[in-house]
Length: 204
Image (cartoon, rainbow, N blue to C red; front, side):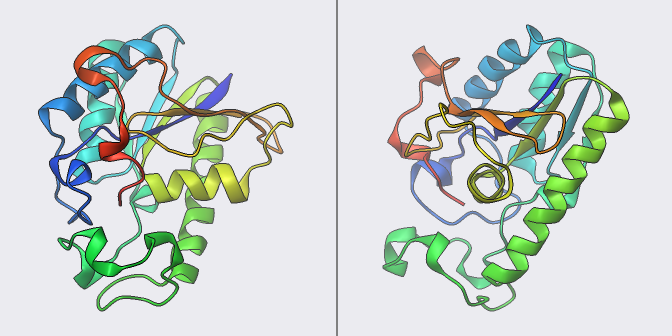
């Protein structure tokens, strides 16, 4: 009876290491990844699906909905950090890691604003899991997932934390407080066309 936190499938801009506009859809490879994680979720017996309303997350969630017959509930708190005017720019041009940008880019969120929203997103998923009373899939984005797994929820001592968060990686949180992470950034469902590599890791 857990919370399954899932990163969206790959997009063309993930692969190109470009900061993504809000309307970025999944690529062909991302759709294959979404189908693979959907099969993984099918075996769990989900009771609900919660998703960011951005297309790349919503399309990933819909793949899970298609095989489980469940409806997708959208929540904007699960969106990726808004990098405003930086969206559409190659990450390499910034000369820094996205996670180190504390200030708000023009028309975007500061790191403090994002952390506050990520905390709200964590509360939303916990309440959704309580309400449905069964296993919940939550489809979100790299920085949101890192905030939950690495800052907001405790991690079991024997749970390794992989360096990279590949597209459609699954993290598992306990349904009950303190919502301990028992699995982090697992991409074991990926193989063939859907196999994870460094192209889409950790991109916003």
